[in-house]
Length: 138
Image (cartoon, rainbow, N blue to C red; front, side):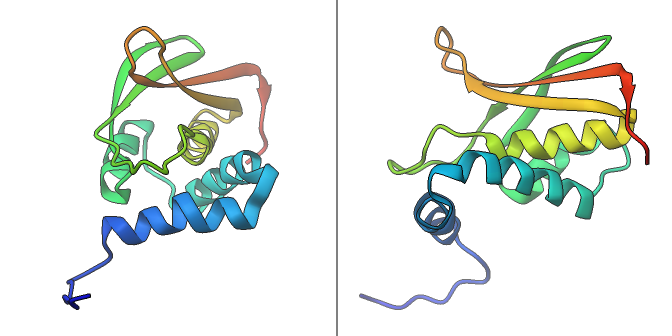
């Protein structure tokens, strides 16, 4: 195998960790732990406003995130351009946890986010929902 020097981390290195190492370590609790890990990343790397979340996704290499629609206590994002390998699980728990925590910090109320692939369109949708009646102490 030829050795080539790279200027930084490669997509292959990211895939090794995300698709092979983490599932082996986390086992059946992988989805829950990744969700809480996403929330922890959000606490360590807060954005100034939720409008900056797509920029964070791009910088982190998580894909292109765009706001599809929003309402009083909800927002739906579409995720595209996510690099995957054949081993990549269709899981968006890390990303969902990150978004949920960023909104919770910004809105000061209980927030959750769920990610899934739309069966009709094949588009990855991350649905954020919050409850303004349940405030979180900062």
